[in-house]
Amino acid sequence: MEMASSPRSVEEIFKDFNARRTAVLRALTLDVDEFYGLCDPDKDNLCLYGHGNESWEVTLPAEEVPPELPEPALGINFARDGMNRRDWLSLVAVHSDSWLLSVAFYLGARLNRNERKRLFSLINELPTVFEVVTDRKPIKDNKPAADSGSKSRGSTKRSSDGQVKSNPKFPADEGYEEEEDEHSETLCGTCGGNYNADEFWIGCDICERWYHGKCVKITPAKAESIKQYKCPSCSLRRPRP
Image 1 (spheres, rainbow, N blue to C red):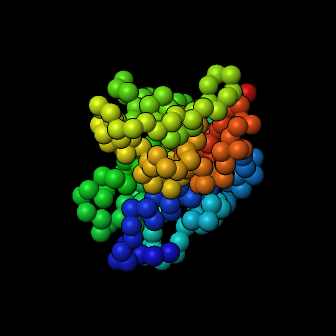
Image 2 (cartoon, one colour):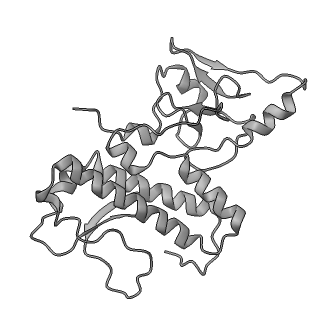
């Protein structure tokens, strides 16, 4: 892992954040029974780590002082049997969100003000680990979203009957340039890249975020057969019991 003294771009740091977040989410959702079993209260102080290769690990904290990277919450296993399981998982999720942010901004220590703002904007587009684990939906602003499918040009949007519709490009007309500026702020939920009308994009029907088709391995032909598309993050959510 590179240290903060090595220059890293916003895109690289966001990619690392997203990979670690995916790993933590897997531990707290898909692999939750295995994770729960590993957090034995009789063991020493344990931490939940999400790694840059999207794998997770429950282990002892790093011995280096100071550590190479900020450390996650220490001793998560001690409270396991003294709390309701759901409440305990929610607590681990909150601490994991804090850890993920601390690692991202540690790696971004040399970013300038605008770069830090962009990094946080990318991160803030994703649901927090806590929101996913507790099945809470983020509160959206009342203003129209920049990634609204009804306005995007050259993108795809599924209607209620499952049909994929492409919004055609039109010749320049009044207000077109302003609309393009608006959608230039739309970012891919996976790589953080800017909106480009010349590329195939697909919108998640659950969280309404947009993705490059290539980033989520969806082609226009494949999209035609998808009635309801769930992005990787929403696919990790556990259904309510």
